[in-house]
Image (tube, rainbow, N blue to C red; front, side, top):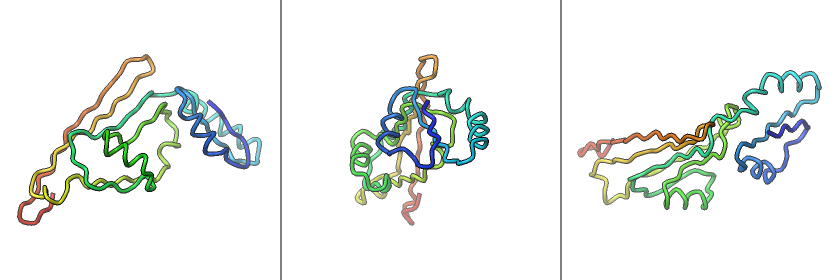
Length: 153
């Protein structure tokens, strides 16, 4: 874990490079008061240095996508979602608010217009690796029934 105590954030390139390494993260304290920083580091320490999961990946399977909005229009991420179904990958997951405070919303239109009368079915899969090296998977099937008269799920 890297702890940045400074008046400015490190470059996004440095932060991204650190976050991509297994077991690594960077936590920023932008405080001027030394006692405030010490108190915050002590309070946050366990959640900063203890990873919960590794290689967390959320994937959509068996779905037909038409249009994808979000990812701040990052075509690389949109193409990856279209090709593999991969929605989000986190190399190392810590119980800190750094993953919760991102306002990233992804909207997916699941079927092209020529299939609008069919029910929409797909699965989402969450794969992860525990700290002890065992792997886990949570898989759920979602079925949205189309109202034939109104075309509404």
